[in-house]
Amino acid sequence: MLFLSLLTSALAQDAVTLEYVKKGQVGTSKPAFTVIANADATDLTVHGSCGSAKFDRTGPAGANDRKTWELDLGAGTYACTGSLSVETRDGETGEMPLKFTVQVMPPMKMRLVADSMDLPGRTLSVTLERDASKVEVSVFGPGGAEIGGGLTPSTARAGQPIAVAWSQDNGEALKMKLKGYDADGFYAELELNPWRYSIPHEDVVFASGSADIDALEVPKLQAAMVEVQNTLAKYGKDVVIKLYVDGHTDTVGDAGRNETLSLDRAKAIAGWFKRAGFPGDIYYAGLGERDPAVATADSVDEVKNRRAVYTLAATAPDLAGGASWAYLH
Image (cartoon, rainbow, N blue to C red; front, side, top):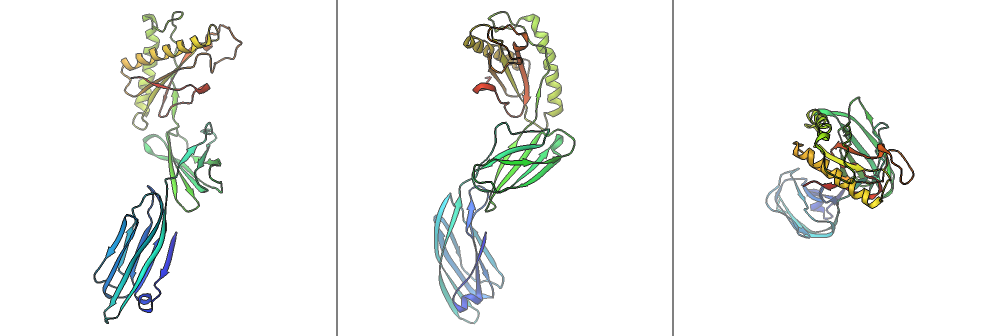
């Protein structure tokens, strides 16, 4: 916000105008102090400071000469003091003290509300740490082309979900950039990479209680790797693609043992892809009996639940039941 103040002495009021930007935000904008000469001056001298930021000038000034100091300060409120003197071409002089306050806000964060992304419906929800005024979204497809966007006005209070919608041309949304603005016009940015692809494949069959991949099962992984390579060729220039492998079991046997076994088998598959030349980061997880493909009672032998999921994505898919991804070193 721009605040305009005229010097109170008759001479200075004619000769100089001061402008203040009294509020800034770390990382996006700085408070500022500007001196504008309204008439020719033999000398216009300014000295002062705001915390560690100093503003100084001396020497002649022509009409409409402008000097702006951006005040490089950390988050906080600062009392600024100094002095200004002017000498006109007629030899008249004037002097006044400078005294004003500036505030620097800490960086503002914007967060995606969990499970709010609806790509087919073209909606999502975010929160801001301060009272909101609007959220802008831009959507990018293959080759970095902008394929959609939207503007959502908002009066949400700090921390309240903001429902954001956008329109979009045909095409896959590979990247989204959001800007959320507070009531003062400061903003936070959020970049999302919603693209992901679940590789269709035939599941590896492991021997009972084992996480070793039998040689007879390798062709299944080789077929999946062909699909992985085709996907990398199509999207790899636009998205930093990672591979996520999560393992699952049915409900037969001890739940803790099943979870460990699913983790070991997911790691074995992830390791195979790494040795086969997958170029990006690989992560794995074991969910055991959690998140079944088919709901069953306990101790039910269900082949559809004994599976692994291979996902190519720019950001980690959510996992059920508090499970987490492990990085394959």
